[in-house]
Image (tube, rainbow, N blue to C red; front, side, top):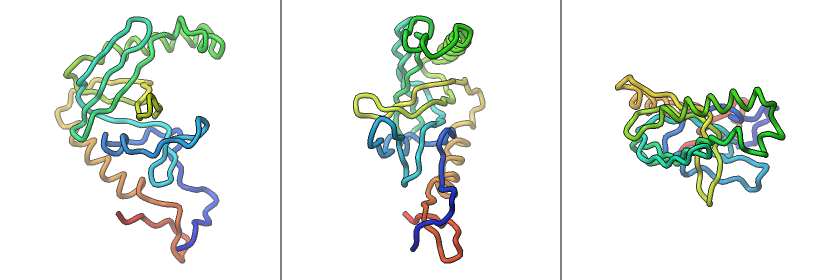
Amino acid sequence: MQQNKNPFPISLHNTHVKLLAFDLLTLTPPISPNHSFTRNSISITRAETVGTITLRDHKPFKFLRFAIDDGTGCIPCILWLNHMTSPHLARRRSPQDLCLLADAAARSAEVVKFGNVARVRGRVTEYKGGVQITVTDVVSERDPNVEVLHWVECVNLARNCYNLVNVSSSSGSVVPKLN
C-alpha cells in the first residue's frame, strides 16, 4: 500500500472525539510537550465520554478531581476552579473572560456528584505519566439509555472513522485499518 496522497490527512485535532475508557486510556502519549496524543497515527487533542462518576476530590477554589466509569474503565478528570487566582490565566485572559470561565467551571462542578451519570468534554492531557481529561464542561444525563447510545456511537465511529489510516488504495481513497 502507498502513503495517502491526499493533501488533507485524517485529523481529529480540536474535535471532541467520542471514546470509551479502554480506548482513551491506551492512546499513544505525545513525543514532546508540543505534540498531542495519537490513536492509529491520528492526532487527538479533545475527547468526550459518558459514564458514572465514581470518585470525587474537591479542593475549593483550586480544582475538582473526579473519575468517570463507562463500564470499560475509569477515566481520571480534572476541572480547574482557580480561574480568579491563577497568575498564568491572568496574563493570558481578560478579567471578563476569567469571570465567564470561573462561572462555567462552578456550574460544571455542581453537576459532578458521586453516582451521577454525566457527559464530560475536555482536552486530553497527561498527568504523572497517565492520560486524563482536563474538563471544559460537564452535563448531567437523565436519559437511562445515554450510556448505551454512547457505546454504540463510539463503536460506530471507531469502525468508520478512527480506524482509518493515512494509507490509500490504488483509487486514492483512504482505507480502513483491519485489526
